[in-house]
Image (cartoon, rainbow, N blue to C red; front, side, top):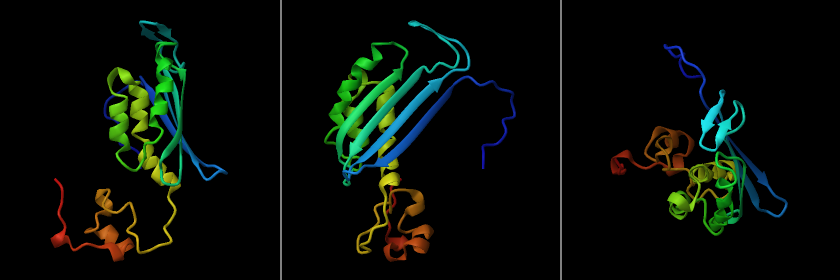
Length: 184
């Protein structure tokens, strides 16, 4: 269902597109690719010059290569569009620092720490925050071992192990609501 129709007239001013793709590689690794494109429907004056309507303000790519355990084994960043060329793209080699991090264990916090402030690009670092959930969604395969609690349980409100969704779809893992402790 789409959002409701706005009650006030409005004009398009900016479009941001984000696309994520995952590829299973022949060597048992995964390539996870994220692209961000910012476009304005009008000419946009910048200190670096006027960006014509329709020409991306940002066109940035990140590829993380990860193993089956979600550990980053390679990272590549490319900027095809940037407001301050060539200065913005000089930071791209720094994103190799992601190698060794794990998408399932504090990745967002670690990446934000490594690339905070002038140590990174605001847009690239923001993009990194999308990788953990997209990777899990992409690489998920139903576990064969039913003795292991499914990783997604207790990670969002719908899959609270004291709730109805778990009672219906994962009855083995239901917690008694009275004994459940909720974080506020």
